[in-house]
Picture 1 (spheres, rainbow over the protein chains, first blue to last red):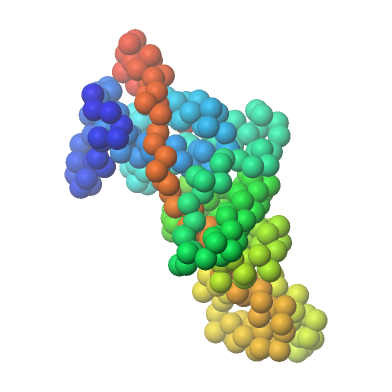
Picture 2 (picture 1 turned 90 degrees about the vertical axis):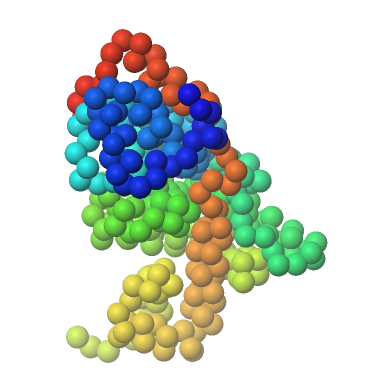
Length: 200
Length: 90
């Protein structure tokens, strides 16, 4: 089969529906094509939630296995993407519980946290952005998993509140509450001065 | 309900800065926060900081060039050496 990088999203809903039907009938190639379209994004989500590349790789394999085993029960009440992401969030939380501790204080290298670059070549402005990037990485890492999940799904992934709440498995009201809490804590951790100076 | 005091407004505004930048406040609540922030340096700065935070977090885009590992389907492949999927809760 094609390497992950060569795979494209299944495309029109009809194509995805057809892949789902084939996967439900036991066609593993169809399952890999269907799920492979979201693999990079899903892996990045796991990296952000778990903060450890090795663990993210392990959990990503488990997510795909659970999705394969569960696809027979997928009824299409949500999109396949939402369904797969929900499995990923559940598995990430399970891994965090098993780990029995919070994510590491600096989850992934700051270089992987690609912030919008400063619109200047000024070295001092670039240094401020680098510092903000590190502070943001630390702030997200220190959030409890439920709050971290909320800010990652809504602000990093850019999902709608409805979709993000569905993935997180809570009501929209509960999800919004988590999101606002996460932002308040991150703001407090980074500090207004750093945010306004570097991000303004 | 009585008119909220200045300190009530301040605490309330600080708690609702995220709702404010998200555009979730109704017209009255938005006016309340706007009115308070006009005379409150902390809350005026807080709005800027919250906007900068959301902007910065949104800049952590979904992929950032990271690719899924080639091993991501290894367990599926191992499992399918033995048969097709069955309906299970996940």
